[in-house]
Length: 195
Image 1 (cartoon, helix red, strand yellow):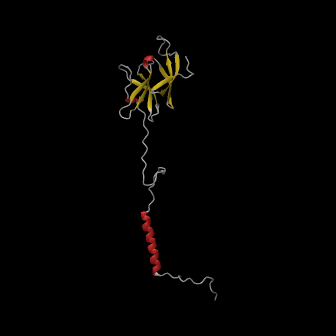
Image 2 (cartoon, one colour):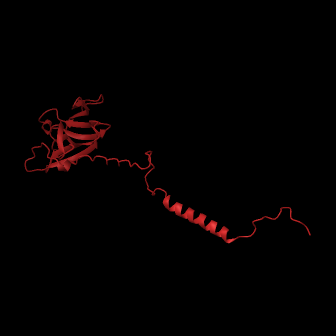
Image 3 (cartoon, one colour):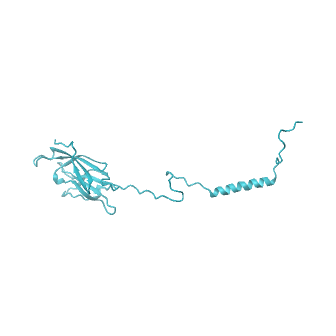
């Protein structure tokens, strides 16, 4: 008979005390795991805040004022003002967008003059017109119009004399407005020209 290379182990039989110790250890692990739970899953990225503190949710972005809710300084008689074009952007750097609207009186025929108005929404209250960039009394129409990076640009079509028909403006002027020192300052880009 050949003897094994490893001597017999003294603990090669299980006794009830072994089963009792294993059951107690398993019960301790299960009980401990019920107290240690992972944080609930969310779709948000984890914050750099220490756990236990909750960060305030960011405020929703401010919405630009709607020109339909504003009374424009136009004398249209029985006709109603029509918003021809509109664009929004933060013009004064306060973090809240303003709306710039090109508006004219509804006309059955002809080409009514346009007005260009800046609308803001105060922190409390209704939106209101805060600036008139182009007055309809000046008999101009707006063809190209944009708000980009806090700058308002427009191409203004006008008339060289009162007897020029309103269908056919004979002057073209490129204009640019930007908020400076508490007002909208107008400048004329170098490429402005007459038709």
